[in-house]
Length: 504
Image (tube, rainbow, N blue to C red; front, side):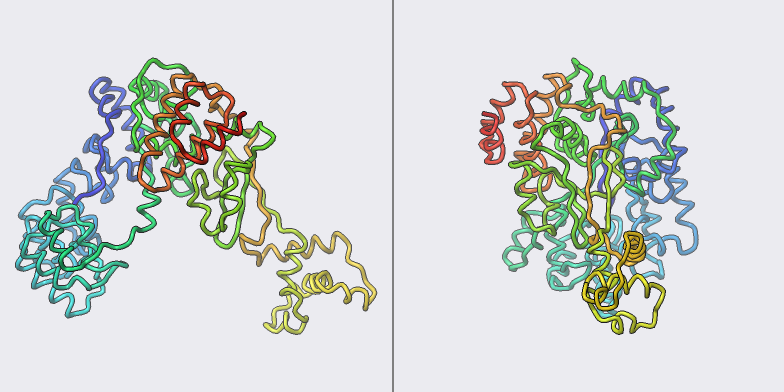
């Protein structure tokens, strides 16, 4: 049942050509908290002694030591408490499956019986029992429907309970997502009028993709990995420059944004493009230069549960400007501003008008404002009410000073929601940015175009929308070579065409 494994060709080349350097690199990772991160434990080239350091998170990797896994499995209640991790281990033996089939835990028995080494006939009886017991673990049944190889016997049973629901989908919908279905089984689903679930947000957004070989670039390019992942990444000591240099000589995709010239061919891939975008390396490559234009600047906008970061530009920023704030994160180039992007600086300010509105409950009488019996901010609430209803201060003959209004704002900060603040962002002048489209060699500019062209031709997705935005940035930038401008014109994309026309 192991899923989500990948091969890192750059790490493989390091292991084969520079084994000593590779060992130094992997030892650094193994001694850090970062060893538990997905790109480490799902990499097929990571050796067993590194995967072991990740504990149960490393179970999904076939290189996890069998004897260590067996020790975990012998612990009382281990499988019941860690059933997903247990069955992610790809090297389960017949003896281990036979033992798990006898478990007192019904979800463990179900997953054991559904395993290729399990028993389809007993599985059906067990699933019937789980359903009749109204088990709270319906996601196990859904997982079996979606991920396990289904014999014709099990498929027929699941077909009969296709409306059974769990984890926001039915058995029938889960079966449609099962990659092991035969053509005949798919045809049966069609004839039975069982339809797949409508495309989910994950189909549009996909997941962040990172590589073990990208780690040296994370450090040298000072990328942001988010708060939780970033904390773990911070436990890594500085990686030797020679390791990153090896990956660059091997044509690593992240090296395409480095300003240094290179004779090495860099192969454009969708995985590589996704990493370039998700790490905001293309944002930095283009936006840093374009913000020097009078018509281009960083633009941050917030709303209820929304804090989006984009740009303001008559053409490239128009759709964002006109879109509903709740939906605009889906647009190309837009991302959520978490405040930990070190290449940007953000400001949040609660202005006097909003502070007064919050403390006065938008002009409610004082008796209503204080009806909850909390009088800690009675003075500030009175100032707020007089601000909202100016007749009060006139009637009682008092005037609030600037210090009084500051006092009111301080009290409002304690109850303000994120969308109550006025927000802004700009490039961080202290960051020391090294990425620049203007400084990138023309050969690498051509490669960046090929990356984005891959994304442009990809299915409807955030990645495709991002690619169109950066192709638009490329069309706008004065340092884009004529050869690339000609290729951009051949895309026949309305946004890119409009930007190209604006150059005249």
